[in-house]
Every structure is written in structure tokens, then in C-alpha cells.
Image 1 (cartoon, rainbow, N blue to C red):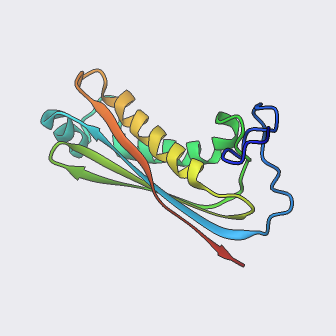
Image 2: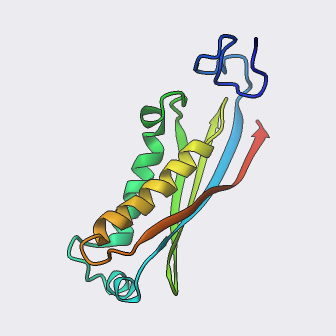
Length: 152
């Protein structure tokens, strides 16, 4: 029985990588966001660059960029993509930090997994750098907020 709903499952119900060989190249952009709740003191230390491990937001930004580039190695059925652009932004809020990622590629398959991975790893990096001083952190609401594709 062929599964029409899941492209990563073959006719026998087994996982497979999707064949994208016949697809046309397109400009693809994906955006994701997530949030980490932090104590007020932790936010203050991040803003003042007083976290002992270093500049939290710069390190998290670089980690998110590296993660987007490594998505095909981390998630078994993802195609490795040549990424044209990766952006990680932060918004410091009263109760934590929102992380936004944007990934752009020209190719035959989308960049949503790369955007989600970038956002997730940026959040995990903030968590790692602050875990010694904030035991109440919660990462939540990681989601794809948009994806577009445009014919070339």
C-alpha cells in the first residue's frame, strides 16, 4: 500500500529519502522562531555581557548559523543544501529571549528544516551558556513561521 500523505515513507512503510531529481530549482526562503524564558537577573547578565562563558547572543548566533549548514548531517532524511543566506536575530523581552531565523537557498527542496534547526540550536546555546545560573529556563514554541518558493 502506497502512503500518499508522507513523502518520506515508501510503498512498504519504510523510511526513505525523497527523490528531488526531477524538481525545478527555485528560490526558497524559510523563517522560524522560538522562545527561551529566563529569570530577570539572567537577562540582565546577558545584556551586560557578564555571563562567565562569554557573549551569549553572539555565540548563539554563530551556533545557529553553523547548525543550519549542518542540518543534512543531523536529520537523517534531509537533503544537504547549499545555503545562500542565514540570519539569526534576537528580541530581548521581559521574560526571556525570542529567537528568529531566516534561511535562503536556491535549489530543489525547501529550507524549513534548516531554519528550524538554526533556531533550535541558537536556543540550546543560550540554555547551555546560562545553565549554571538559571535553573528555571524553558525553551518553547519553536515553529516555522513562513516558507516561500519562487520560480527562477
